[in-house]
Image (tube, rainbow, N blue to C red; front, side, top):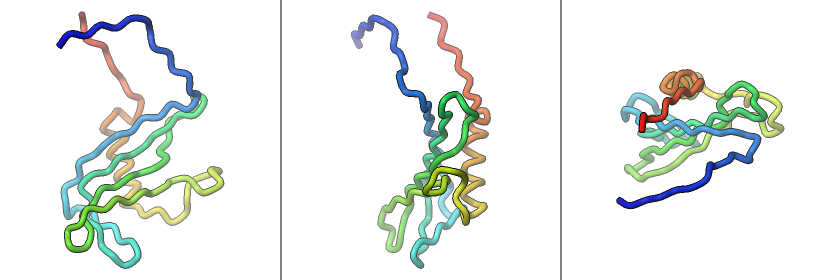
Length: 117
């Protein structure tokens, strides 16, 4: 592959976000929405650090098998509608998914060392 690049990229947004994907073993988590059981196989947890504040989880997007094996998605917003705190009623199992995602990237104290070139 032939590729060249020049300059240095600059991030302009104040709200830094990271998404962490987890492949879930089917059958280890069941989500029920409107009476239908969903079997998640993937979770994408979105973390943010607004204005250099501590990292916090904002949202979890699940990909799941629904009734009859159909693929469905489910988004769980972790903040209240007013964004003034955590949403009430989030099941403990979803917080466990968030904890697994955070642990998988060093509690979102993400560390990275560029390759030696």
